[in-house]
Amino acid sequence: MTGLVDEAALTALAEGHHARTARAWGTREAGGQLVKVYVIEAPGRTVDEAGLAPALRIAGDQLALGRHAGALGLAVLIVHAGGDGDYVLVHSWIEGHMSELAIWTGPAGRPEELRPGRQGLAPCVWEAAVLAHEREAFVRRVLDGAGTAAERVGAWAADVIEGDLR
Image (cartoon, rainbow, N blue to C red; front, top):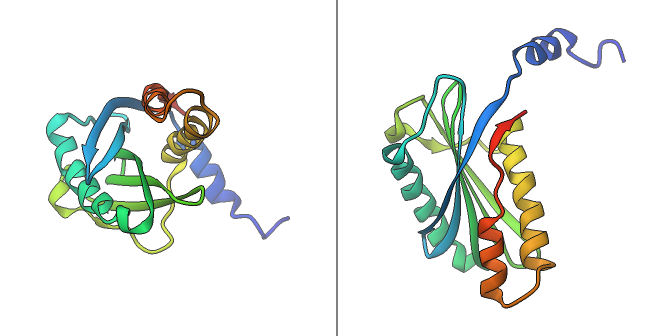
């Protein structure tokens, strides 16, 4: 395996790895869909309600297009105040057991400069932890859940991940 793996880069990445705090901020309406909102904060960074507003506008614009793509009306918004900038992820469930993901990136603390991420950009390890939980919550509470559609959606909305993400 020598030569196939960038050992120096992996070691540096591992040495700099740390927990980040995730908080669930309930559900909101954006773009005609029910959106479960999360905030992830790097050490020394915080997101308040004013910082959430630009992300909700972005989510609303993105999700408004979703009904044309078979959206089911359930989505997740992640606002990540990262160590190297800000990130907004909009994940929505669509027809056929599929989902859509859109990512915006920008400089830290400058929401007016958030732009769509480059093609191929995928969630970081902390964002992926939230999305992995959300996949399980969707399957457990909505697809395999019991009760009416409204009861299943309510159970999904209440099923959140919070605390330190590794």
